[in-house]
Image (cartoon, rainbow, N blue to C red):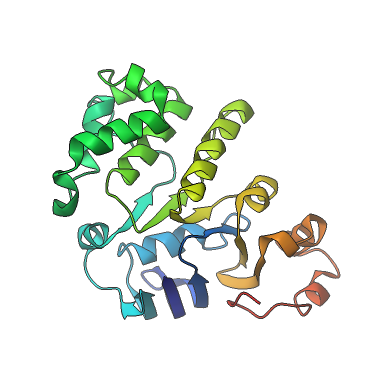
Length: 248
């Protein structure tokens, strides 16, 4: 459904991504893991039109074009790192902003009820200012706001960042429900253990390149950690059953 070909991107004269080739399958949850500075967030910002790039981005086999707001209208929606809710607006107002694309407006009321079914806690706080929420509740608002745009592909950046373990489990239970509903999800996550548990496909990035792409079910966690931390002997593991940027 979504594909990058020889994608390079960065900030001004600084290149962060180097010839990245990735395929995100329709209906699958694809996790991208890697240490800080690997280029994970840069990848999402490039996909959503926030950064210039060379190479190709394809959605449904066609070049993805337009500004960030155009891409949301086409169904490519991002839940940003750090939640980034509108603090002085209510929970419900934040959610309604997600339905800004014209194709979503007619179903606003029904989609709101769907979000409240997914996130019962938000229904209890629908009139509360988003700035007064806990970190976990704010993450739910950010995810609900993204889902209000009826995404074909949902990009989620570091949903566990700064959250207590019990809240992380709650957020990932919601992600599992979205996956079960058939939502195509691209998940950026530093917690490799939980990423591996929820993912169908997993890509490991380091220094702006993809060094491992495999089905999640076939990945050994210890080997993944060796590659993640570039431990001695990990180089040998990159040649076993994988080719950069393509799932076997």
